[in-house]
Image 1 (cartoon, rainbow, N blue to C red):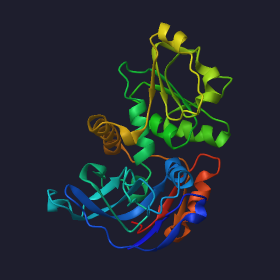
Image 2 (image 1 turned 180 degrees about the vertical axis):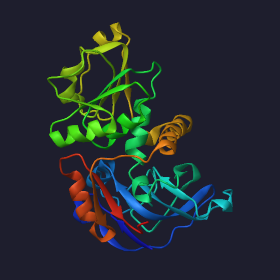
Image 3 (image 1 turned 60 degrees about the vertical axis):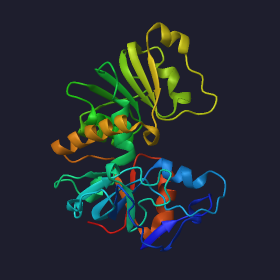
Image 4 (image 1 turned 90 degrees about the vertical axis):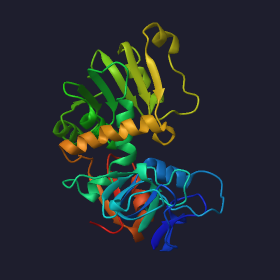
Length: 307
């Protein structure tokens, strides 16, 4: 199969494209013929950081394609099933930046007929992250999300009826995107006075703007946490504010399954909407990583087999 991989950490140029042996599905696994592969921040951060190990890594956790074969214990009737894939490269050498990838059955989720493989590759990390952020004990009526990128867009779509999702935007095109999804674009000067849930990727910068606006019993979902971060825990404790870190790769099977169900329920109602999509070929994977690392709300996809 053709694949992209790296054996040392560094800039996008460490990525190589060529031939690798076809993987074989293990017990409880399916082998997916990849149509599209999604590039997320975790993918280029994993490539760029860490010690050189010499171990071959095919990157990318997310993708979509068709089940080509199954391992022991998996019904053969699943062959031909269109699926969206998540967590393919977590503690595994074979991500979705390849013509074939093998994942546990639970990580290959059926894709409705009216959702394209291209859209399916946009799910995974951002939508599961959004689902977990919204998975709070007390339903949130007012949500504040910093940014209108992949996670912010997913939060707007996954929030329940009647939930007001405010997205902090910096440009008019972002505001247009948020309104089209049904969200409320705001700036740092127009934040709501009462917030039940905050979704924050950069609390070191954003925290001063919402620390005093959280409602009693509110929640903060941190999807990023810089070193040395200090939180106003005494103040929040007095108001029973819950602070949670969210990383989809280490969720329990039960919680992850609940998040997958949330995303699947959305797909049964409508195809997902994403930030503007930019497409690269497998041979252009280094350029795809470089583009994904640059500022701006966009979704970068690698077209592997199409469809």
